[in-house]
Image (tube, rainbow, N blue to C red; front, side):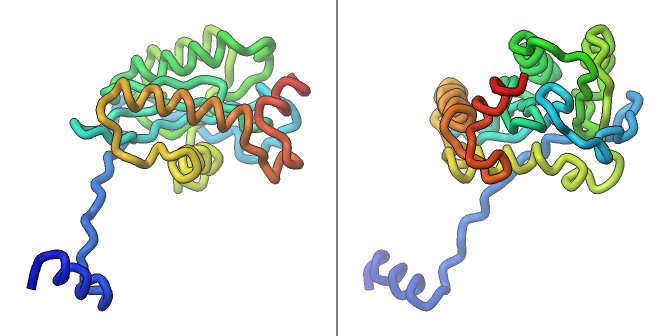
Length: 206
């Protein structure tokens, strides 16, 4: 019996072992930096640039992982800042934050919400927020639930815009991430937005 015939028989009887996909941990909350309280959980979000949620997700390449830092406006669901880099160093999150700040017209009263990862708790990152008079909010318990919108956006980009595949290299992943985020912001209709796109809601209300 040849290999292909054997595999077909095993597949037919559900006896094939699926290859495990390895993931990368993106949150390290065991650090010396101050962890802020969650001040966003009871807020009624009524406008853009009221609450931004931030997160990091991993993207696979043939040579290893790279990391996509995202900042999403909670009201419009628009990704307002992002950066993809080949390490979990602070610089990627800072670049994503600076992009978000650059495109925003009015950030008065803005809250920045994230997990307790070392990147978001670091002095460099929090000082940028404080200089801009942005209030800082972080998850306290069950961080997946307390940062649910950021987790959902990660899932949409991977499940609907194919960022869950393995890319050739970081440059390939960057092109794919840029395209996915543009499509998400400009074309994807959200039930929660009355079937409008994030860009449409952000521009109409900002």
